[in-house]
Image (cartoon, rainbow, N blue to C red; front, side, top):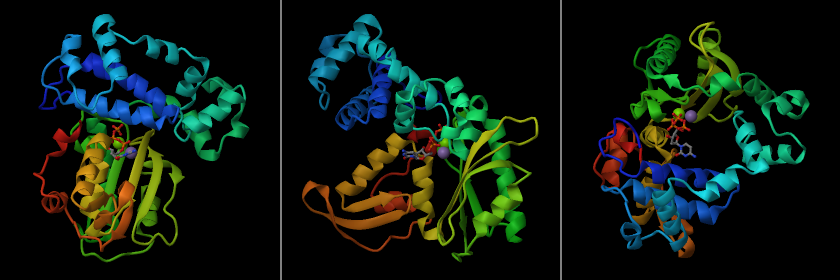
Length: 337
Ligand code: DCP
Ligand code: MG
Ligand code: MN
């Protein structure tokens, strides 16, 4: 589990091994197994004692017989033969290699594999099959897969805030929040997820694009996706940047939300994804739907199908979401499970 997280984790070895299987089933888009494994992993993470014998596993709810057997195998042998077998398959080895490149997902990786492209070197020989972004990210793959130390992440955040204030001319008119693992107070981050809103509620079209242009040369080095024109109340950017010419290239996401959606957006991008999943389920249970774009009252019919969706409930801050959902506020640091 996470260092620095209040709750101790007693079954790391079991969780790690099951997560390896989950990863493979995710690549294979095996939805049924993914759901079963995610549930089981979530349950085991919540345990406050170490699993030591098959007796401990027997009575566990929401875990099926097959996964129970796997857990016993991990306690007895420290690993899963199934993981060894699947990880060793030619196709899975290739997918693991190819998906190291940002912009190459498991599906694209599988089509490359069937063309005989199995390694990063193979990709370099076949650049013509890659789009511009994939080419850039292939070039920078070793840099982009290094985690960002917290101090450097803070510098990136400060650079964005400074340009934001300079651009708007009124300090404090715009607010920026560094979300993701950074906000969960991790020691290092995979990327930067920075959210922005305008505090007086006004919407200025093209604002994010102006910010991006100012950040060129100061931070940003490559653009992956620019905000779309006409996306006036919600603009989104993905790119790459570094804090100096000697620095390591980092993945940076910037997103602009209207202030009545900001609480939901910050909540969503703070994560973790597992935490979001449980929050969404709770919202559904009590008649709401929750996403990064807002909290809505809903009515659902059979198969949980949405029958009716009401007006968005303004949530400028995370605390508004917690209050409306009748939940106690949880500090970001405790949301990593
Ligand atoms: N998110 C989600 N579901 C996804 C992807 C993302 O709920 N499929 C949310 C939760 C994540 C947040 O967005 O915490 C940011 O996504 P990241 O992939 O950047 O994840 P983290 O910032 O949590 O971790 P990392 O340190 O790897 O960037
Ligand atoms: Mg992140
Ligand atoms: Mn991100």
